[in-house]
Length: 586
Image (cartoon, rainbow, N blue to C red; front, side):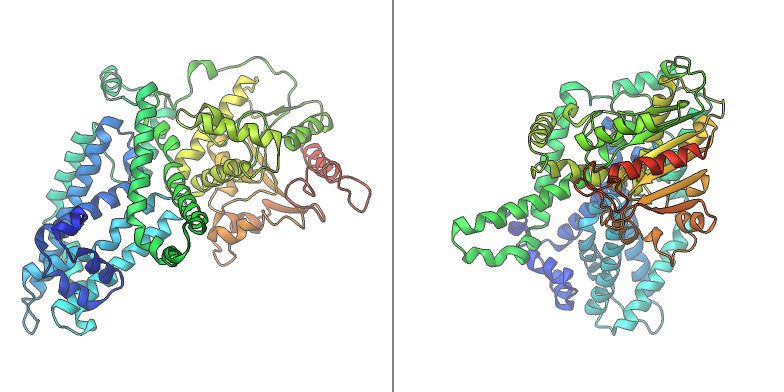
């Protein structure tokens, strides 16, 4: 039985494969596809929808209700189609200039459409941290495809195709800024009407306006609240159903879209006996599941910001003041590493915190138990969809700390660290964590506005959370904030210049911490203007060696058994370093 798309256009798959390979013959063949105009239009619409999903952070930033979200995606895809039409007409007009080679409008429209094939994967731009690079790569791929396509159907040398496409783009951009201006404004009005908000096309501007209104204590009008409640289906059972359906749809889309990649990687296994193919099938399933998990990771944060869960992002009355805390000279908050699944930490971390508290001066208040890998401060076993799975994982990990199932928690939280480090999701996620820290402080008697300093102690991934949330927290409490990083894996994009100091404690055998300078380009020395490098030059960041110590137990900085050459255990050495830093501030 033929696939529905194959029935529509029998040679479509072969043609698209040729487009991906930038084969000129594939673009010529696209002109002869059955119902080629319909196929071309379908590619453009799907590419526009895929790109809208990949860039949907701007919709969340505008706090669009869920019922209107799908409509907004559709409108964005329609606007994408209009851009395609304008670009096609602009390039076609160039071919009518003197000495130019004329290309029929139909041929140019089809070629430009199939050139959008790489953008069918534009939804991958939603991936945390890596998504921006993937999006840029897909657009370069699309640009190369359009150049090869125009050269092929116009029988032109590539340099002339570059001239046609380049001038066509210039005409297109000029038209958008002149004749297309009313159309853009109309599109913005349509988006505002469909989304139900005063739509801001740039997420940074939308976030800025929302945060300003919260800082000024502005509350939505009664009519806006009623409208939001009417368009708020994601509660209780609906939230679970929507989540499961979304997960299934994404799994199917990725499995189908990446079928050629699966064939390329594991196609040779078809010659193996069925039992021997099982491990490779499981490996592919794991890769797809990891990709789906990465795509879904920002949703809790974005949904919280958009108000989909019924949570108010502004501080509520319960967090205006807490019990008195007379005599406290500094507050210290511990932010755990990627092994955290709830307010209860793993045994090695609990042992570290139990040992840390007595070593601190008496006027230091240590806060612990905040789940910083969720803006909702919810443990994994309270996830509305996967709670049963996380309970099994946690139970297995407690029974056997070396269990491979525990890696699921680490993988999930590594992705959340990527969300925090992402330039699109980070401002929302880090704001949410700062709000969580703020509420924890106030609940424990922190006098807002008193200037009492705060120290954030971040272990591993908690180092990123600490540095990234510090700017927002400092703005909220109006007091100095310093960070003690315990093998912290940190991006260099956080505003380290806002910190009083960053004490970066690292073991010489800590291979996990070394991932930070490798994975985050903002930590590279050549990026001299990044916050990280500027803070290092100003002496804000202090590098402190813990000696021949690893990252985690056994052999890590919390190990109560392994000893250094001076006779102290790794844990005792770490505690002494922290105590010395804190005492120097009193």
